[in-house]
Length: 309
Image (cartoon, rainbow, N blue to C red; front, side, top):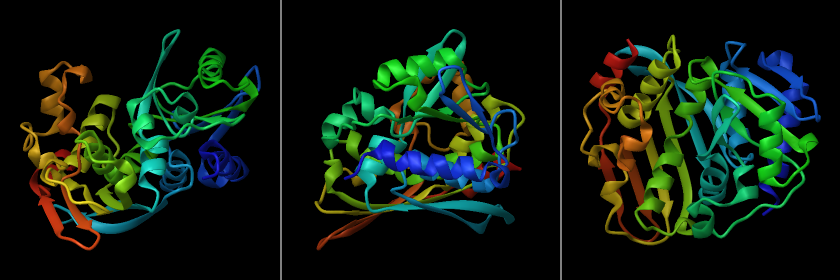
């Protein structure tokens, strides 16, 4: 497989070339790192969110929108499909890099994580990237500066001039779209965490509703997680049977049935206090090649409607 960061850089070039059409802003930092504002000082956009989801997966996923309903109201949904779930969703797309630099706080996803490859998932997949450019998508309500770019460059082992930091806030159009694109990633990661070999996951397709843009980051975080846990649907094709497929979905968790705003309030928004099984899609179909097909979980439209409207 070609370098994940190389493939993502080609999409970054596309974003820069079509910045006006995507309604994003591009800034050069001292040291020549580049920041792409996908939804911090700009409101974000649907097309920007779709491209950013592709960037996060290093171009290994197809991402598009469709119209459906939530509680009888027309609501856009995002669909993502990939035939490389281990690389595209786990080694690239997963949000696993927590950044805290001189007052800047952000959660990083994208293929730059594979240049560091310190998370357990890289050992499970058996992948580490080597490239001169690093693409790290940041979820933050502030734009990164030179100190952030320098910290990313040092940890990823690349020059600052090779650092690209597309950034968006959760409370933006882009944030709602990108979150909805994560349903397949959540199912793939949850299955891996349960002990299933991620290389045996052959394909993954997922969809989830796009949450209405909230007025602040906390409300947006609650809504976007509701969209996945109560409206996210995923289909996986796998190579081997497993006796824990029923634990992939959010319905398997003890907190299922409560809006995320209430769950987060109970732990004072300290995510380290939350159980891992909380972050999962609502319903999953697992098709074992040459074997059984398992359908687990269910969507919960009433909670979605309460959260959204």
